Image (tube, one colour):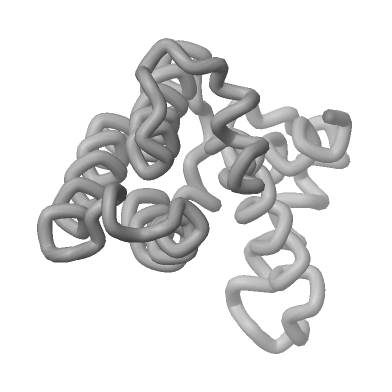
Amino acid sequence: MLIADACNKLRGTYLSICSSGFNPSSLSPITLRTSYQSVVVPKALYGCELWTVIGASDMLRLERSHRFCIKSMQQFHSLTNTDFALASINVNSIENIIDRKKLVFFGQLCRLPNQYLAKQVFINRLVRYLNNDKQTKGFVPEIYRLLYK
């Protein structure tokens, strides 16, 4: 459900921005990229730091929506090479964007003073994970997966 909503928000918000005056034919792709990265992506990926298990099919759905927007803002055909479309305006894949957001959140938790409940819960979950209480889902196993990656 979260992934479907994120896909709809990626496409819907991008198309809404394009229909409100930010037309790809009248603006440069760099300008559209800026609005895409500052408005569309944060709206679609709100809370993605806490998404724990994103399957390959869900990630593919997100990537397809992301590619649609990237190629549309550059007025490329849908069969254009995705790597070329992403590199030509210096945009990362949606998986890299999500992973970066998770790592930034991890860094914020690590720097949070110990007096906060969020820090105490995080440390508790981390210690439980390190003491072989291997959770199969959750933020801590996801961070370990990213750090191994």
